[in-house]
Amino acid sequence: MPIEVYSDLADIRSGFEDKPVSDYFAAIVHDPLRKRVNGSESLLYQKLRVLRFIDWLKGQKNKILLVVAHEETMRVFIAYFEGGIEDDQLRKIHIGNCEYRHYMLNCT
Image (tube, rainbow, N blue to C red):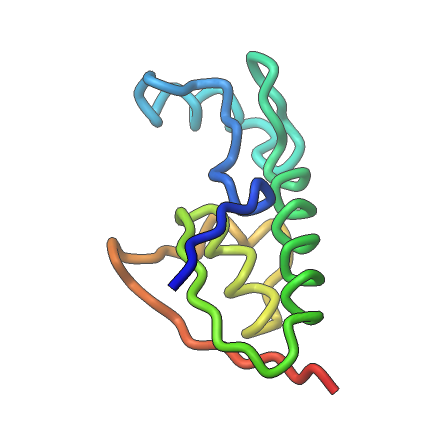
């Protein structure tokens, strides 16, 4: 199977690469959805990237695809496909290591 990399699925660009994730969380604590630190992107901007990828997926009619992504990206998938999750609730979604979800798009 061919492997393709899509930049829209990249993990959030936190600005804290190679630093403890606790430092990142401390830096965005007052506005976790919109805060940008060290040239990073906000959680809402990252969400827009992932939604752009989901729009691309809609055009992949009659295909079975495996999407591999980090937790921040998976949160957007869960909110989109399972619904009822507001932006301020995204951080409360927890995904286990190697956890998978199965979704089907109606691409009629």
